[in-house]
Image (cartoon, rainbow, N blue to C red; front, side):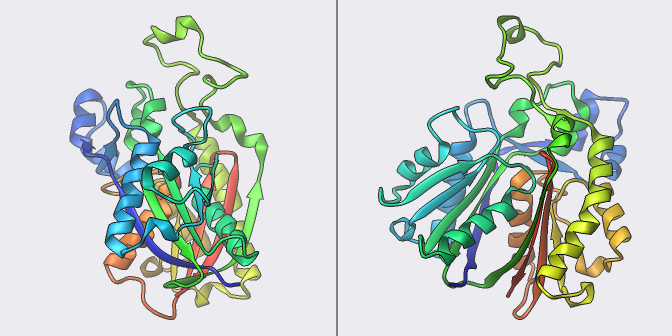
Length: 329
């Protein structure tokens, strides 16, 4: 059975952090330097009392209202997050209850970052293709800001909080076609929150420590850049091969919106025409697993996506993990 993306909506928290605000906190960086370095002018940040489930519920409710979707139609919830409300229960169960989705529906979390949306499409297609579900609610929701130390200017300029909700169904505007995946756990330490899990729990001395430590997000930017430059061209080649297409047959490329400098490097390396390459991070930042659905929704709103187009989606990052897929409108 075929699987389609039927509808997408997303939700952004109210608090806006601009480059002007960051430049005041870090006077050694100018507004222009921040914008030129990452291609981001502002990002949204969840407040202290807002968590991934809250953003997920808000995004799903927008999906329901904007696209006239009845929660009773949903028979599976997939929620991608690396900042869950609790170790247990799964955040997807909380979301199922709050959204009024039937108790006959399945629900699970999966822990992936920037490749998570493409992996989620693969999981949803599998559920539909095997007859286990007809309507899958795929949610990506992240509050990375809660992991970032207030003096970490590099990560604070890049990451924003957001959630996106996608309805994957037996019909819709874009058919989900062939996938390519990859994993290299050797890169686990390059983008990590080391403390907070069971292997390295938060210690009492960490709670009142104001210094940046292992309980905060660490990113080795140069290692992530090199990983992207090395692996993503291969991912694109494999995704094209699986779908029996060449580069010229793709009408639009939507990659994980990591930062503008990195994406421009990859675009040039792959020789993708600028007019076929989607960028949408200037006003939202790097929203981790939500960057691709947010970019798809923006492209749809701007009429950049039309009928009979082949669109290649590629997610890559923390793990290391990467995935690509072609969708056909």
